[in-house]
Every structure is written in structure tokens, then in C-alpha cells.
Length: 119
Image (cartoon, rainbow, N blue to C red; front, side):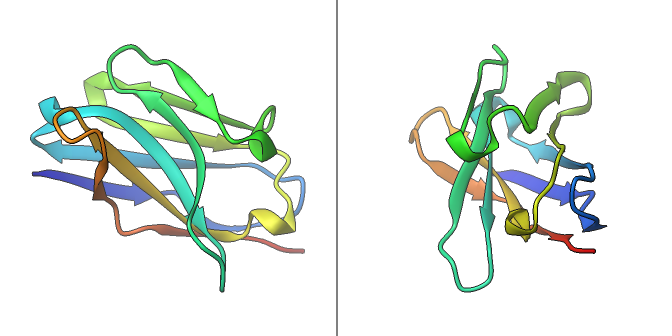
């Protein structure tokens, strides 16, 4: 089992920045990729981006390219989502998920952290 805990959400003004953290514990050797997803009110959960747990290769959804950056600190078992130039439409609950090496699916999820972009 892998446990994921997100932190860093909050209220930020448009064009502001926020950094989310996702800390993993438990059977972290099972993790292949850590991804960030978000779910706005009344919307389906959507992919934001992901990073290889060891190799560090990243990929992003088109709508966050150039604004969001994912990084990791393996010593702290933590993945970060740096969000810049935030817009009102970025308001959502942000989740991190761990893609397992065996299943190739996002089997593990954090509890989510609320990000609200508003003036």
C-alpha cells in the first residue's frame, strides 16, 4: 500500500502562484509515476501532469503548459506542483495519484487539497 498526502492548497488571487506538495509513504518502491489531477465543482476529474518517480520525466496537459511545473525530491518522497499565473478556471480540488509498477494504473490517491483562485 502507498499513502499519499497533499498539502499547500488555499486561496490565491488571479495571476498568483501556489505550490502543492504530495508526500508518499508506505510501499513507495511500487510507485512508477506520480500524477496530479484536479476536479472542479460539477466537473469530472482531469489530468494535470505527471512525473516519473525515479527518472523525473514530466508530461503536462495542454492547458497548463508553461504555467505549471512538476518536480520531485526523492529524499523527501515528495512531488511538487508549482502553479503560476493562476486563473479562476484553475479553481478545483487537486489530487495526487501514484501509478503502480505492477498494475500500470493510478491505484493510490491522496485526499485532495482545495485551490481557489479569486479576487
